[in-house]
Amino acid sequence: MSDSLIEESILSRPTYGTLKIVPGLAHYFLADASGAECIIRDVQELPRDMMEKVHILYVPTPGEAALITSLYALGAKRFEHFPTIEEAVAKLGEWLSDAKMGSQLYLAGTEGLVGQGVAKGEECGLDHTAVQCEHRGSLARRVQCVHCKTMIEDVTTQPVKCPTCDLLLLVRDHYSRRLAAFQGVCINAEDPTEEIEIKEVFK
Amino acid sequence: MSASDHLIPVVVSNVVEVNPIIKRFEFKHVNGDELPAFSGGAHIVVEMLDDGTKRKNPYSLMSSPFERDQYAISVRRDDTGRGGSKFMHEQVRPGMQMKISAPVNLFSLDLRARKHLMIAGGIGITPFIAQMTQADKLGVPFELHYAARSVSQAAYMDSLADRFGDHVSCYCDDQGESVDLEVLLSNQPLGTHVYVCGPKGMIERVVETASSLGWPAAHVHFEHFLAPPVGEPFEVHLAKAGIDITVGAEQSLLEAVEASGTPINCMCRGGACGQCETVVVACDGDIMHNDHWLDEEQRAAKQRIMPCVSRFRGKRLELDL
Image (cartoon, rainbow over all chains, first blue to last red; front, side, top):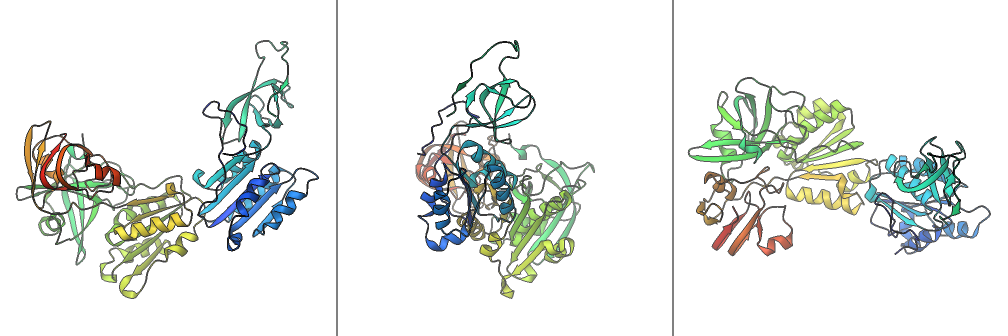
C-alpha cells in the first residue's frame, strides 16, 4: 500500500496504487518533493545497466536541494528539474513525443502533478495500462471553476473562492481525467448573500 | 440466432488462380444488390453444398470496404483438411450460386491507433488487404510486414508492394529473409497498435515479444481461425432436443448439431469468438478442446465445450442443447 491518505469516495474520484517497475523499453518518472522518495525507492533497486532506460523529471519544493542530489545520484540517463509542475509536464510531453511503444510512465506525488502527468501521457499516445500513479503528500486539490473555467491550484479549503469570478465554490469529489481537476460548483447560487464558513479540509 | 442463419444468395462472379495453392473467389448478390457494409478484418461464412454434406467455412474479406458491389476472399487449398478448401478449389466456378453470411468482424482496426502495424504470415494476408485499403483512405499511418515460405506462395505480394509502396515489407523464407520482431516492435511510436494474422507460432512470437518489451496488451491484436480438425466419429446426446447425433470423421460437432436441426449460436466457426460455448451435462471420456477461447482450468473441468472445433473420445457426451 502507498502512504496515500485518500479516503474512499465516489467512483469518478481517482484512487492510486504503489509504483512497481514493469518490463519496458524505457521508464519515465515524474515526481514532486513528496513523491521523490517513491522514485528513489524503486530506481535504486534496478540493476546498473537498466539506468540507460530511466528518465526522471522532478519538481522540487523551492529552496530544497537534498532530494535533487539524491535523485541525480541515481545515475539515470536523463535527469532534469523544473520549478513548476507545468514546466515539468511540458518537458515530459517533449520526451514522450520521441518515445517508443514499450515505454512506461511512473507518476508520484500530489494529485495535481499525478493528474497532469496522466493527461499528458494520454495525449502522447500512452495506454492507461502503461501509466502508474502513487499519491504522496498533501491532499490539496486542483480545481476547475465550472463557471469561468479558471484552474485553481493547491486548493485546501471547502468551499474555495474562485480568484477570477469571485464565486464561492463547493469542491466536489467529481473529477475530470481530461482536465486533471476536481469540479468546483457555486455553493450559494440561490442566495449569494448566504454566508458560508471556509474551512481547511484538504491538508 | 447466428449470423449464418440469414444467408445472402450470391453468384460467383469470378474465380482467379492466384498461385498453385491459392484461388480468389468473387461474389455478387444474385439480384445485383449492394452487399452489407463491413470494415477491414471482417470475415464471411461460405456455405458449401458438397454432395449431401453442408459445410460452412469462415474466410476473411479482402475486397475494399468502400466497394459493396462485390466481395472477394482467397482460399488456400489444404488437401489434408476436411474438404472445404478442396471443394472451393475443385467445384466452385463462375456463375455458380452459393450462400454466404453477412460479414462479422473479430479483427477490426482499433480506430484510436496513431499507427497500425500489421504482421502477416502466408494466407493470413487476406484481412490486411482490406485493412490497408481502409487505413490508407482514413489517412492513418500503417506498415505491413508480410512473411511467406517462398516467392511463388506469397499471394498478392507484388500487387501490394505496387499499391502501397514503402508501407509494405516482404520476407520470403526461401530467400533467407525473416522479420526481426524485436527490432520492429522496439521502434514503433507511442500509440501504435500491432495486428498479427498467420500461423500459431508467429502469433505467439509477436504476442510474447510485444509483452516482453512492455507493450500494453490492449495494443496487440491477433486473429487465428482454426480449421476444425478431422478425427474419429463420435456420438453425442443433445439433452434439450432429446436426440442422439453422430459426428462424422470430417464433420465438426457444430456442423452435426446444425444438420440435426437443433438451434445453436455460432459466429466464427474457428474456436475464436466464444459464441457457440455450450454447457456439458455429462462427460465420460476426453474432450479434445482445440479452441483458444476456454482457459486451461475450464478445459480440465469438462463443463464447457466449443462445438465448432472440439471433438470427443469416450463413452458418453451429453450437451445442454
